[in-house]
Length: 111
Length: 112
Image (cartoon, rainbow over the protein chains, first blue to last red):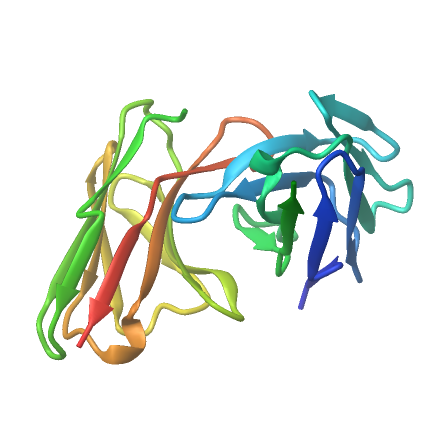
């Protein structure tokens, strides 16, 4: 079945550093979604990507839809303490209304 | 904010008791979903609905049932709760564009 692999699993960085994480799949996706989950809260949609090669920004966040349609990248510039959380990628399961979620990247930011 | 509320937000119950979790949305989304989130497993789909009275199973549906009698409400029922159903439960609604989903705040359920 379709699977999404996220890396790294966790990151420990210093405030002000840039962050990069990625999500890969064995099959093609037509949409890539990036979510952030704060402790004790539900996931919040950060960025949605709809076309291969698309590069989209949301403040300090930038995400790219890989041209092979099998991967996506999320970058966070100049990290701040409130960036702490778990970042999930997700994409629609083939020909269904269901999403497949990656296993998440846990980000810790130290002052 | 997709206008999603979940109730209760926290619940402790005993093995064998029935439990119903409620998801309420205010923006008339057609699709609604129930997930559970556990360490090491990420988000797993329990059941989903594609309209009033139209529901289907997800990947971990055993032990759960759902009902949707109104567009705005999607209920998840554990007929006889077990300790393995201790988890955080999230409701989500489907956006109108490209499979986006928006999540509620979650319900933390503990089955003793």
